[in-house]
Amino acid sequence: MDTNQNNIEFKILGITMERLSIFYGLFLIFWGIVVSFLSGSNSLTSYIPSLLGIPVLIFAYLSTKFTSKKKMFMHFVVLFGLLIAIGGFDFLRSLITGNAFENYWADISKLMMLISGLLFVHQCVRSFIHARKVRDLNT
Image (cartoon, one colour):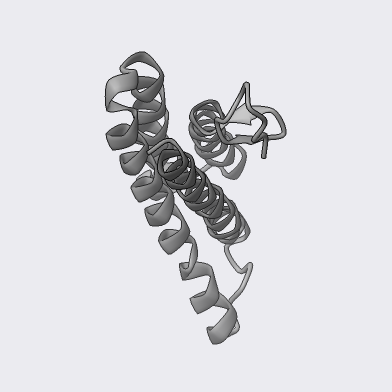
């Protein structure tokens, strides 16, 4: 997190949350397409990461283009991040029932969604906390 006087925007490894969100959306889209191709799946469910990555990408992009609405767009981004994490929790059902990795590609996608979704939401929350602290310092 970079908090010096010249640059008080929240960053992760020098990347803003908006840019990280764009990368995350692209990653999800790419993941769904690649996993569907590698698994030979004809099911729409194999594209769930892609389908959830599209709104992440769109809202993150909109937050960079319409900076006056950045707060609103980034709240939509974190909402989809939370949906991604919640969707990934279905992997735990496979673990509990003892069927983990019987459908390798489905479970690896759920596990990816769980881990990446939780990490992404965590960073979004950190960013929101940072923004509130900066706002409070400036008032």
